[in-house]
Amino acid sequence: MRVRRTLPPAAVPLDFQDLWNGFKGFLAGESYDEKLKEEIRRYFNVKHVFLTSSGKASLYLMLMALKFLRPQKREVIIPAYTCFSVPSAIVRAGLTVVPCDIDASSLDFDRNILKNRTTNKTLCVVPNHLFGVPSRMDDIIEMCRGRDVFVLEDAAQAMGSGNGEKFLGTIGDAGFFSLGRGKAVTCGSGGIIMTNSDTISAAIQNEYDRIPYPRKTESLKELAKAALMSLFIRPYLYWIPAAIPFLKLGRTVFDPDFPVQRLSSMQAGLCATWRRRLEKAMSIRKRQAAQLCSQLKIAGPLNSSCVLPYLRFPVIVESRVQKRRICEAAAKKGLGITQMYPSPINEIPQIAHCFRGHSFPGARLVADRLITMPLHQFVNDRDRAEMVRLIAWALRARRRDSMVSGDLAMPIPHLVAKGRGQS
Image (cartoon, rainbow, N blue to C red):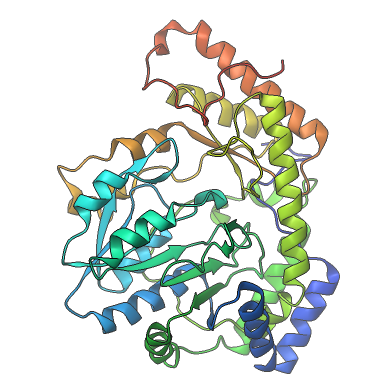
């Protein structure tokens, strides 16, 4: 671990004014929550908004609402490669996790497999817009409409991104954003539920009425955490929390016992300038992604024009060994290049017994070979050049090492750095 400048994999800074707004929200109470809901309704052009303590709390409440509406259906189809928080929420809701393999070239559902996975027991399908890359929602909605299956959008990493004339998260029957650390906008932790369905909204409201606001002492602790985060997310200090094991920064955890609460008025206050912060962050990430595409001389991740505000820049490299080399070297240099989720959903130890005999080769390949590169405002020209040099070095080392030739499948078009980067 570098003791000086270290890039976080993702960073959404809060300034003093944001923290002051959080304190004012703490004092003002629920009026800040209502103001935030109204702003979100107008900005995303949706009818109903609910604010929760986390993205997975949002998904849990949505699932409980759908379970009430379709009590005979118990299965929830999710991508076999996604955040572990998604199956955590499904298990907490007392529903059945049904992984569906993905197309590794798009990180989206394999459509042929998805059709076969959907049955009369399917409550909903949960497409995810991983890194802000849009899932093909029209295909999914068309397939689900004829089978009485709900579509819940996991837009946790895609707040502000669009698909045509609509924002991601507003296309399905309901959707949610995350306000956690490292997302497009943060207030430390939090979630947003959105739907245009009066029926679904009424069912969510029934669940929402049962959950509490955080206690005042909890809100003050969260404000203190937000202040510390805003300080230690800076590259010249990030090496400190990154070196503390119990903070578990960047780790993916399966935990169905997470708290389910409303968003506190303090956190709503932290979001007072969310529109300005969102649009600034999206502009920076789009520019950083375009520069990486040019310097690496590869097509943009899943989009050759490279115009989307990816939360992180995803690249699938040629082998598991190459991925390890890049991540280890990046950690020594403090470049913030990391893997994402360590395994497909079916290999999570707590639920792996449910999927014995099943394999998900697309998800397995992505788990083995995906790296992500930071795109936030703290990444400067020198950082980006160093990342490009590192990937070029790893690719040269890969070719020199005959022991790992043919280690995995052939490279995937549009996602793979093919060794043409600058040296």
